[in-house]
Length: 161
Image (cartoon, rainbow, N blue to C red):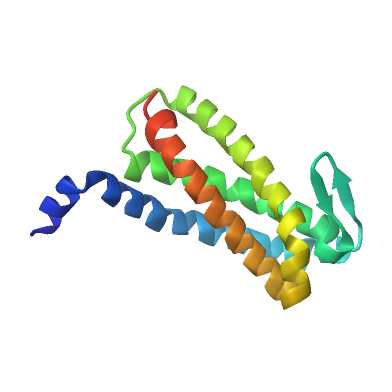
């Protein structure tokens, strides 16, 4: 079976694989921005707790440093991901403005979830693995959750309208 035949026969599976592989570009952007923020820019504000809405970033799970690093890196990755996925994975020809608006709504929902998730799972991983490795593991789990939520919404809603 040729590659072309495989991709035509299993188009949805191939599209998911392409989505995940291209998401790695956004992941690299996310990790780079996260590392810069978490270990350089906001390093000195880790003791300042952030307890707001559903977010509970105590000094034990990174405080203001982790909150800002997670937020800024996630936003940078989502801008990158929208551009890449729209052009290469979904080859969307729909209204770019409407697509960007729906993508933003999806990202905001996902954003709240992945900003809340570290406050729940962070204490376990920070305690078990230490602050630095714990932060990386929590970040990977947040990225994985985000991708699993976003693929079907992109495929069936955002890139189709």
